[in-house]
Amino acid sequence: MPANVLAEDVRKMYIRPLIISLFFAVAGELLLLVIYGIILFPEGNLLYKVLWTLGFCGIGMGATLGAGINLFVMGRYAGPNAILLTILLSFLIMGVACDLLCLNLDIHFNYFGAQASPLLFSAGGVLGSILAGAGIGGLLFTETGRSVLERIGI
Image (tube, rainbow, N blue to C red):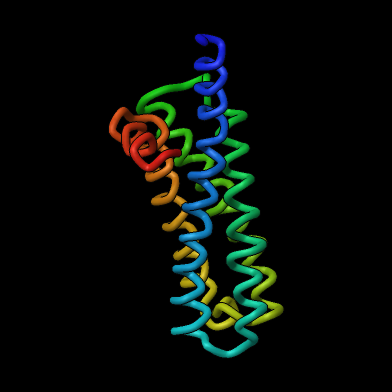
């Protein structure tokens, strides 16, 4: 019995960052889709915008961030240090790497306003990545966050 309990704890430890990162990335991209792709810059094909934001960026960034947290933070750091590293990883993966890629792509496709306002385009991604990293870190590396995840079954 203790071996099963231990295996379940290890599984949770490495699955949680993936689930939480995917949730935050997709939710953040949904918000960006509504603000930038529908309200501020409604021109362009909505289906392509949805595929780009929720499919490629949301799932791709969430999975990459979750894997990065598993590789560089889980089991190595705890508490405030783990939260800060999660924020840093989120900023680097979503706020820098993905934002630069998407900025250059959107200058070509012009779906989300990168041509009209590249600073506004990047500001949303950078700010969102920092907030997402803080939220993910808080859920994964604090007692309160872990109890919330336990209550919702993650």
